[in-house]
Image (cartoon, rainbow, N blue to C red):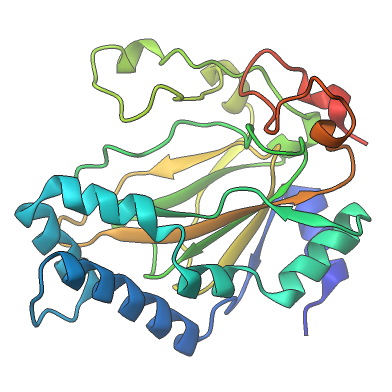
Length: 261
């Protein structure tokens, strides 16, 4: 049974809270098997280790590996584990909202190249301004494998200005997305930075205004696989209040603080 008050207090104080055993061992095994079966559909083999199978497919065909990544977020086994009743009820209570929308279920895969790591940012481009994010690794994350970095208490000041222009240190690099949102370094350096070590199956719940980023995987044999979701409350959802509003609030050009209840 979840202690809703304890979770709410943690979110309000630090901007995030860790739920132990969000996924059971059975849940994790179902997800891993489903992902391996999907990779075996690309190229069958006897490999049963998901991390080794990932590198096997990457070596075989990078494009098909990418297609596996893109379609995995629609995997029903993955979705049914994300949308637990306890989480949905908590979001409703936290925002005092009778309706909650799924914002963007996703799978994140970070291998030894670290080419998909994210700079410090807040969760934007959602249906609602203030949402709750959920971050669940299916393998342990630590200083070697890399993982989630949070900037404690950075949620309290609301949303900061975001840029789609990479910082100077990234301008010579080929980026994997043209929506590389980031916040000025002067802003997030004011807050305590924590690289979280999260056990497999544990879930990090965080408020959308919390500044967060990725930290590097230095274990060349591992791949960090994380499933995520963004829970959007009905309250203050512009798309259902303004005929000119886009379905998702834009990354830039909108003052998200004015949309808050």
